[in-house]
Length: 289
Ligand SMILES: Nc1ncnc2c1ncn2[C@@H]1O[C@H](COP(=O)(O)OP(=O)(O)O)[C@@H](O)[C@H]1O
Ligand SMILES: [Mg+2]
Image 1 (cartoon, rainbow, N blue to C red):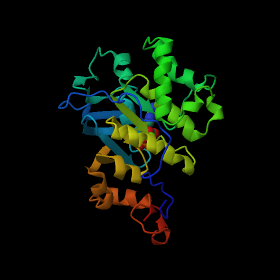
Image 2 (image 1 turned 180 degrees about the vertical axis):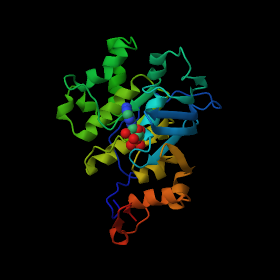
Image 3 (image 1 turned 135 degrees about the vertical axis):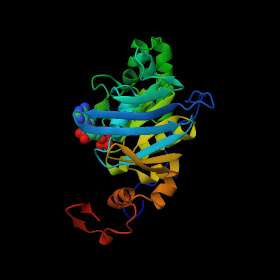
Image 4 (image 1 turned 60 degrees about the vertical axis):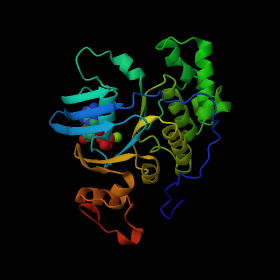
């Protein structure tokens, strides 16, 4: 922990077993897993995505930062086809998924998403939370689904919790179950939307470690987060969003240490990343300076 209580994820250990096959399917090397081209989205007259372009090559982690309301969740929801775009195009493994007639369930199966709220089924044991979609949607046999579920629970350090109910687990454990559940369908990309934001500080690290391991195993990921240490250590590329636009992007350490745009500087300053101590900060009607 540093002085501001940010969890350092390097060196933390979760008792995850590293057996079994790699989680990420090898993607064709040259085709990006996700490509977003001039995507626009409004809710009424509120322009939420204002011409977003981004490319996520296979096996890389894109970190998305930005203030509340800047459009980060909407961007992930568009990629997962939970929201239709108003303009622009989104490609998944080279195929345009924003075109008419696309098979939405088939696309969604390949795109795992994890939210801030764990959304586990409260009346189902952990094992059944994991196997339900695989058996119903993926038509996987019970035994096969349960084998994979046990393997994934091992990877997120929860082999002993297969028979527990969600309410018997901590928030960090529930979020690790949610990640394992998202991995059941063998997604080719994982979207994480502030998955540690609802957790008590001491539970954040165990979830970040699971995500770090996934990245190291070659999973392609889009990660919306306020955990700047994670962004720096695990991100291959970082974008800063403000008002539905990408204001600045680059290598995480470069953007975080040497932000160029005034809006990026202010955002990072407000998240205390550039302030050595609280003493340096003042507040006025525009927020923290
Ligand atoms: N379903 C929706 N209907 C209307 N407005 C929405 C909806 N979802 C998001 N918004 C608005 O879009 C803007 C961006 O929201 P969001 O993508 O959740 O931002 P972030 O995740 O960066 O906080 C906000 O102004 C929010 O109120
Ligand atoms: Mg959000």
